Image 1 (tube, rainbow, N blue to C red):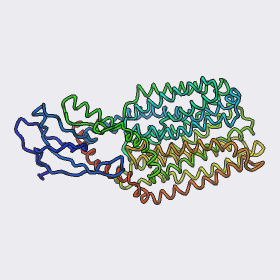
Image 2: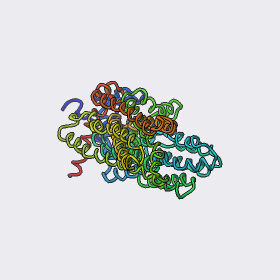
Image 3: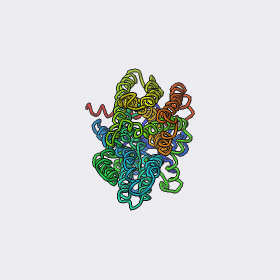
Image 4: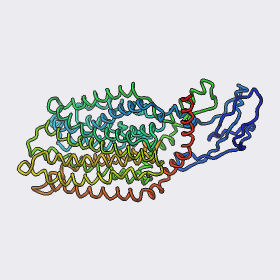
Length: 565
């Protein structure tokens, strides 16, 4: 037995030895502890670099012999209570949580697109021009972009459950000034605040990282991504029926009803998944029960948690990652640019299908092929995810690099170019082709759009783990910001470019631009390791994950042995 493994000698009345770690807040080590120390890396969030606290083993709990002595503080680690964390939730509980999160994400993205069905009536009711009426959609999307960035880091500090509840509550509140607006200004203010209150996919995707390890998260990420893209495309479908049968106020009442339903479902069916919050709760439980009176959760050991500097540090984390992390920056811009092309193309639907004399409801149903494309793309990812998981299980995690997550995207992303070109020149009118032809091409566009979003998100969640919410916040920021900007120029572009063939040439320009989206994907696939090597934050998390993985494996084996006994 090595010296580090030798237990310390004590009197018969002393308690059994336990592992204690030196606190970062300045607590001194007990003089009675005679052990060797070992160094294990941990992540310094503020600086993005690794620090190396000392871990001391087998120190006697003097306070157990003398209750009057104050217990020494140490931080509870994940591997000490792995069974309490989201990773250890039963499979049914994980997917119940994801099912509710799916509905939450649908409702938030539903709000971004259903507004367009109110613009005509809003223009007439408040006597504003159609471009001004469409400002409500642009404002919401741009505010939503910043909302994703602002909410994400708070969910990493205070937990997913409370942040999502606060977000949903505020979203629902801001529907009221829109539905009851005495002037159009109230609508714009309500839309802006509603978008800013939307936590979006950054928080919901962070929850997948809470419950699945990077190499097991594929199915969960694919499911959440489907809810994110589908929410935007179901809005016009339901909105068409609302527009046809009900006054414009019901566009907002339906959003409110949907929001209240999902908030109640989230309140009663979803529990906290964030590891740091669960560690805080477990540490408090152990102290109160007397099991370990010196243990504290990671958030409990932080000083000045709500200082101005701390608040600014938390708020700016996603923006810092967006600007300074090459993975987040490049993939977010790629995904955002692709989404802007899709939103711009969708803006032409009313003009395109009016050639076939489509009414309000029929125009809404033209979005059905987009949802079909999203579902097809989702289903195409499932066998690939299963295959890669099986290979990793048989050959080890090192057999599959992170860039392997982008391989299927390389085959599906070109469908965006094909779809946009095909859509452009199949919109000549009923004398040239049937209306089903452009719908088929929009289905191809949707397949590619889902694939690009899925590939970039999966890559980020795997790279940034517990800080996936901040990382994917950059992706959501780019997608919503570019989509919001596209709402400004899309309609004028389709009405004024190309003369008689204005619809065709506008979509052709989008198809040519989509070629630019292909290049970064191939660059990232081949040069990904070098790019990741320049990401200090991702590298630090990777080292920390590898260092602590053996603790988790040991804990799981221990649990398995207890179960067998």
